[in-house]
View 1: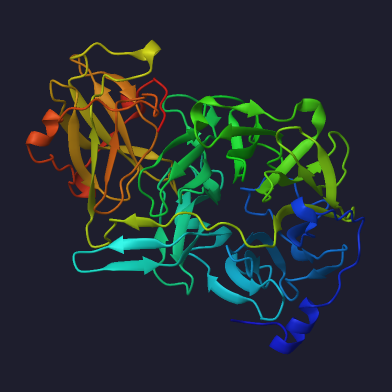
View 2 (view 1 turned 60 degrees about the vertical axis):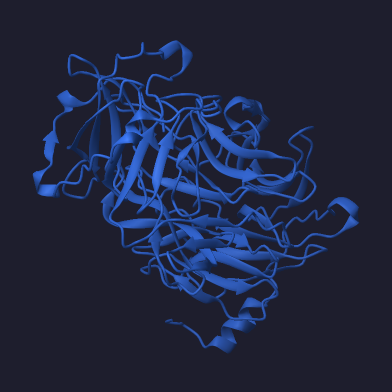
Length: 505
């Protein structure tokens, strides 16, 4: 790891006290004083949004101890951002770059400053927004192996987002020693802002372009920590752009939402219940309440959140906010910097461990649906209307080409509305229900299957809270059709083949 100064000098600089700002440092429930870690950014630098490649340039990590004393944890780095505290409260992940020309990489340091930061990974082409994952147990024919991992937002080499405007980002994972690097999500537009739910699933913000439409939405979606079982978590209720989810101790997921993608990623605060996320949306703040950014949980059900007043060029400060009463109090504010991404440095409950069937040696996975005619009530199809399922591959954009679509093939839908199909793993696909006239009836957003895994649905566009009918799918009575022709044999589809109906995961 290249250093501009010796390790001893860096460690001494990391323990140096930073210039004090305006500090109001209250206590948590029970009178316990809190230590915070947060990212500070130059006041004029927070403009491009948290998915913008330039966000975080010139930033630093600051530890704020009881009484308001501060020290810099990222001395010697050109830029640092995205702090994340381990479940035992002793270590901190963060993204950083040593020089302006370096890629963003993930580092880990001790919260007490007693250890020089250790580089974990730079991903495949750069890495941001790291999180600690619960233990994953990989299931093989001869063993059950525990994996201790982190996840992060990584750039995908050679790819651009679906609009061709910026580098493409997905969720990635690796072990804490940097080995076993894996890409987890395969959306054609950018995925950002991961957080872990108490049950071990990961929720994050996914840019989803509606097929055949010009607008973009950014819902909160959920996925297992191995990239399986991708589904909508908080979507159409509220404003169309939802970012920065934070699961709370009170059973909520608090997030920032706005009507536009532009700006620094800030907006109003909203929440959903972890029990019924698709049917419990609640706005916590309004348009006149200023701009909120990067909420994170506190053990008493409140959240830390960055806030600035609407209008003007004021900087962000860190506040404690109660989602129920909306009461807000200052935790830390240095007006010379934007204070963002604050996290409590303390032990927290470890999310549930998960098992995984993903096997990297299997190049395929399966899709199945119990009954394609089970849909939203206003969009129901009569049984027998859908005759076949068309599976369309999405080819990612690059600097030289836009996103294109290729036909993987079609499979027959059984008379009970079920199907199963085997397709290439880790490949963005859209599913189209085809009627008797050969025209699309419904289509999905981009989805994927992981190696050796099966992704299933009750129906198409159905309410995910619905219980599936208790019957054996007729499609399972025969082996799954395999749609895995060589890429150069897959027929390109023009825009004329694109369906006009909107999709959802």
